[in-house]
Length: 424
Image 1 (tube, rainbow, N blue to C red):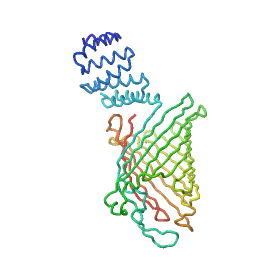
Image 2: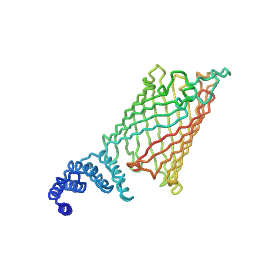
Image 3: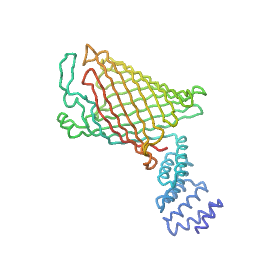
Image 4: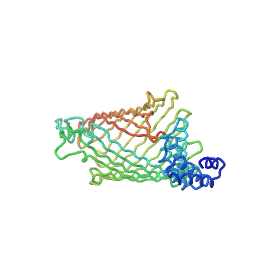
């Protein structure tokens, strides 16, 4: 009977193949080989719902990795034929996990990328538990000179940096509502939340009754993105409008409206320059004055071929408000480098930035105003030889040092983040 099913499949006879496979399944409903043949027969008959059902059963009853690989590929194909692209992508990730060789893995990645271009919806989920030396954005100093009096004031424990663990998660959803040869429009939604658990030393330092939840935050955003080509020889232009609501320690904090745009130009096969900018209006719930921020960034990226990738950026930012401590101008310089190949199974990239921010006046220094210089160094490591369902682990390490004319705003902390990234 098995040979009859195989022969029928080779001859493209879906009816006979289905009958033979059904006879085998009557004897053993968990026969993975028979379920595979029944799946292929359903595909030949364009019975894609049936192919999903039989293929799913074949996957869970498979006796070998090769059977699981074949079954998951067939289910992914059946879902794609029904335009269930997200489900198809899930099954392709299952297939990637059991791919028998590099060639099969590459084929799965190619199929996934094709489905990504067809799927109107994309979902990005992230979750992490990471250590940090500054959960409360506190000062790195124990004392500060306030109000231009020349007298040192001792900062309380809550105003100084508190160490702990950050528990964070976020979900981003994008849905393509329109597309043509020269444009595409997306609806965006996102939610993020983070809370903290203080270390024992931080609990001793903080005031009584203060815990990590007092520094928790959450943000919900909704928006739309339009991507279009202004001229045949130009890269796509991207424009986004978003609305957001934030909470702090469970209480409503602020509302945001942000408009942003980005444009890139290819100067040569190895050089790209991009210009991006945004304008944001922030309204606080506690009656604080509104804050309007404008920012523009220019980035030059160069492909160094066998030597990696190099980038330079300059960002100008201006913030306006009646609140003097929200009024500033800043310039930020950035340098990035990505190694061309993994080193001992780790793909490395690094970024260094320096920001000079000036406040003409401040409630904390009404005569002299205040200024801040912030240096940040970050390293990203992707472990390319470790993979699960098409995802690879990522470690991000960041060191931030801020020198400020008012010590209350000085910072010196390290963040270590654990993340995952898709292999394709």
